[in-house]
Length: 200
Ligand code: GAR
Image 1 (cartoon, helix red, strand yellow):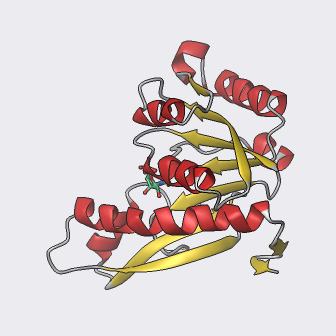
Image 2 (image 1 turned 90 degrees about the horizontal axis):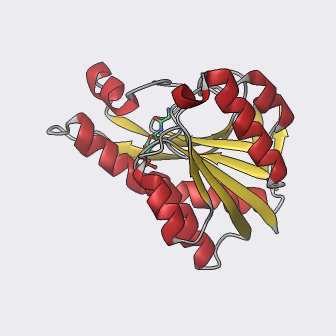
């Protein structure tokens, strides 16, 4: 069974969806580690409630980004992690980590990429005026939200949406497609072919 680590920064609703899917036997992965750059992240308690080892470290307390990511990398390697899922982890990974875990890092983003990468994607979608947005699970490469796309789901923008109501509706779809993408990867069914991901 693949060994799964999840990196989080905040709420942890995607983490919870993943851990529930694992507990229900829908995803053949063993969650071995949850790490956060925010020791106060509610996501860490969700991990502990599911009996998954959880570690929150502030980069500033360690002396900066480089030291933080060195600790992340060492911890992932020590835990013999096969797959890293970024779930609301709000930092760009160093290219060295991306390269070491090439096509073994997934991210979920709250837009239909390549539209609205980066921060505040639901707000960007509202401000642009699109009628449909959504969410994307993609492999992580060196760019910001640029890696090969695994799954996407569309979400309509409603007339009275605020960034918060839209983000909440998008998250519901994330909770469906993120565990599904991890299941496919865990079953060895994702093949990266240039920019395209084939589901075999
Ligand atoms: C999710 O909507 C995720 O797509 C987004 O943060 C939220 C985390 O929620 N990620 C990004 O914007 C990354 N660029 P959660 O902590 O409840 O899973």
